[in-house]
Image (cartoon, rainbow, N blue to C red):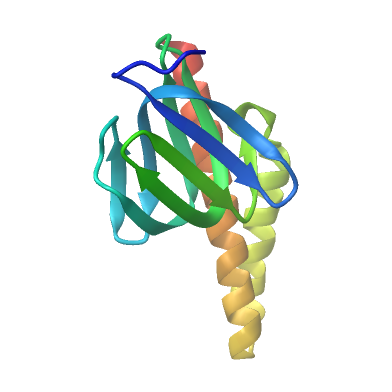
Length: 144
C-alpha cells in the first residue's frame, strides 16, 4: 500500500517473526507511562510497552488487534516500530490456554514463598490477563 500524508508505516515484530507491516492511520497501546494514541506526524518517542492489546486502524479503515507481551515502541513522524517480547494476532490467541495460565498464576501467587517465585507468578498473571483483554476486544469487535 502506498504511503499517503495521512498514514504512517507500522511494523510489529517479535523475536520469532513479523506480525504486522502496513500503512495505518491510528495506533493504540499501553506504555509504562500510560496509554498511547499515535497518529501520523507524531513527535518522535521511544517507550516501553506493557503487556496488553495493541489496536491499529489501517489506511483502508480496517481495525486489527494484536497482543504484545511487552517490548519497545519507537515512533518517528511517519514510522512506528514495535519490537515485542511476544506478539500474536489477537484472533490467534487461545482463550482457554490464557484462562488456564491465569488460574495457574493466581495459584502460584498464593502459594509462592520466595520473592523470585512471586515475581514470576505476577508476570505470568499480567501476561495472561493481557491476552484475555485482547481476546475480549476481538469479541467486542465482532459484535459491532
